[in-house]
Length: 172
Length: 172
DNA sequence: CGCGATTACTTGTCGATACAACCAACATGC
DNA sequence: GCATGTTGGTTGTATCGACAAGTAATCGCG
Image 1 (cartoon, protein in one colour):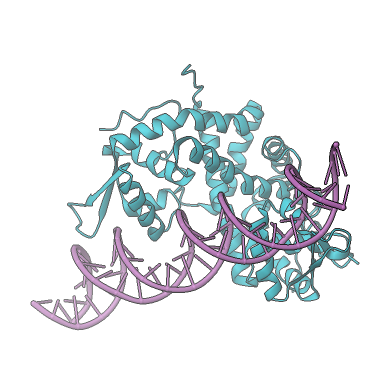
Image 2 (cartoon, each protein chain N blue to C red):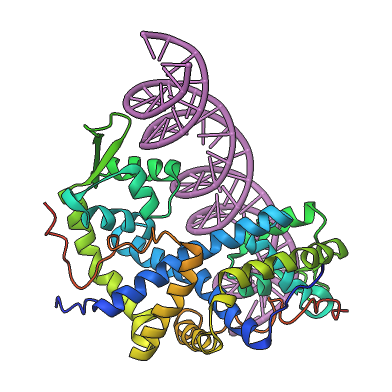
């Protein structure tokens, strides 16, 4: 039974680096956003997801799915964001069990103010150290892995991310 | 001043996938190890780092550095691991401010028992979905990024990881 | 209808981490 | 040698997320 296929030298080396990357990246993103905008990366993602969605509004369940949060976690975070005036919640008219969340103007203003610094961080730590070929390779590699980790593409569906520019105002 | 270089379509796509990967990977590793061995991935890393070090022993500060932990965090985790009999702590004879941590036989036994399942998880979710070329590319790409995130190579220095096999017993 | 099951969310509790404050031991300047 | 500062580590406090339980609305089905 004990037929474990241990890692080759190359596999181990690549894995060690990937783990280190996954360990360090979230902290760097959180630190910059927290310092410059008072938002965790997760909160930033929540506001971005709402800002990029139709009517700037999304159901809590859908939002949780898109941001890889459990519903209780999102509920707590949403309460805090609402207390800060960055989002608003109201019952969904079509399904009275459901709750809709909307980014407020203040929320949009905050992420638009935060976006440049965040993009700088992303460039400085990741994008600008890679060649165009490596960027494409990263896209393919991460795609393969995500086919396992996220087969439904919940986290990579087009919303959630600042693409080219501050393309948020196109909401309403 | 507002000369932010926004992300191109390719950059954005690669970045979204990398973020999703960094978001999902820790949870998958934690879940499997917690379920099968009662260890978080961080605790597993601590035990592995000790097991791979000379005399199975390391200074708390060094261990914190290698595992990307703050010293308070490591202190709390070490107390819990010690209560479970997986490590032992004792004052360093050479510097009486310092504390040394050692994996116990029980700790070694636990990680050796946990390693096969962990390796399976790593293979299933990452290594086995990549071609040999992609493995090499991942190594290079992560290396570039880590040159920014971890310039001192604290997390990638040879310890910390199960390389080819259960090569732990070679300690004492 | 009407009863159980499911869905959507909120709330409560607990464990874990960050941050700050703290103490002990070493190191230096004078 | 003793005052000052630095290093190594632990302990307390507040915050955040996971898990479980609870509530309310909808669905399924006889």
